Image (cartoon, each protein chain N blue to C red):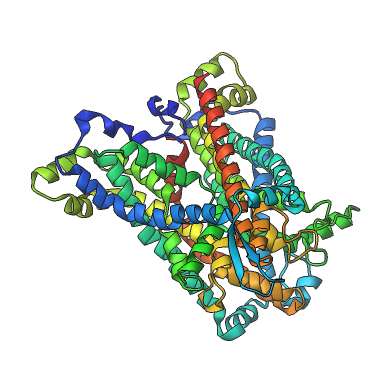
Length: 309
Length: 302
């Protein structure tokens, strides 16, 4: 993500007068006020909560006592078998989802940009359709498409001799991956296709004169030129993936293969509302946010390097 | 956040790809392959939605008994009537709530973001870069990581299970501020503001009578994105609201889905309700096509 607006920093363009700071404050205050309430305060409060623990005194009948426990909540969360297996599951999910979705989006965008492609406007509209479907509804649709008896998909496969239970414990992870792929591929196709439209025509012409075919043109010329857009997509995809909650929560009602602590976010929700341990829920939320911070740092570092080379 | 691309010169855009296509037409085989793959990919995207549309026309028996892409007894009207009657018409209450939450986020949150983005673009002030850095960190904080903390905070001040528990968070849109800064640089020439200043207009008047009309397309884009984001949000309302009368349609439908597990007669209602709940978004997307495209481009390519 680059900040294009930096030209305004040049002194010659400055519209500033003496009271510019005061005017800026006037325009910025509403945003930073809601930012403080809706982002800073919750994060600070949950860091605070994560250092304490509610302990029942007197055989659990007395009033509970709040006690400072340092990092103990974090240790407990990270030692929890269900949290760790949820985390491993989330990483496996990432390992399947990210290459499939990003790879699919790249291929589709390159196909759409190929000279021989027809009806580009229509295809763009069609692939974007799933983005207009909320995550809850997408998960519901696919839950039915995975359910034997109601699903045409299962029926077609069965008539071809393939007996698949998409909601089975072995297949549930790929089934959830498929829902996310369906939801997000088209959105990223549009971003990549727009980036491809900005590739200078001269470069493509020169490569064609040199005898490059469409396939080589796509891989050797176009792909490197859309790397900046690709790295932005990677960044937002990783942040989005760590938040996985909606789809498995909806699917969980249709199958027992998804437990209430299936991924870290569900673990945190379960900690808060079923186990009534807000302190551990807070610690888990902070761990997820830290993980997102570390991963997005790595991606930006990596893409900056790629940009420079 | 790459700083490298800051200095990258604007690459010339290709106005029409028709030109590129006509210059080099591949053979029949490649044309067939490319378009065939495009059709396959699009079918994957479209068929589940089509299934939803067909399924919403069926009653419980037909849902399990007839072919998926055919009409059974065509019970769409009955289904809609059932959805409307259930629990005293609570479904339309949910839809209205979704419109209120998403609309408020789009208009109020959008205006707040546009004002901030405008200030970052047009004013010089101390700590500008650090403050913008704070905004960008806000873009990167996973939304759901703040949901539970927000719930804990809201329950401390007694705001859970009220509309404010949703309305306050949806006003915060750091990515909108980032977009607004890009749009402000692109849509509002500094000279125009300078002229207004020379004519004696104050900064507030200048913004509302000159800046805001000029950045309007950007405002619509930011608002549209926020509208979709809030409409699709599930975890925040799920955590914050217990009163069914306050729920948005995403959470409401998921409650019906829970009923449908023991009561199969709820299945057509879940399906029909799902179908009805995507109609407003589809309409918004089709009508505002040029806005979402420009928004997605500004976020990544520029």
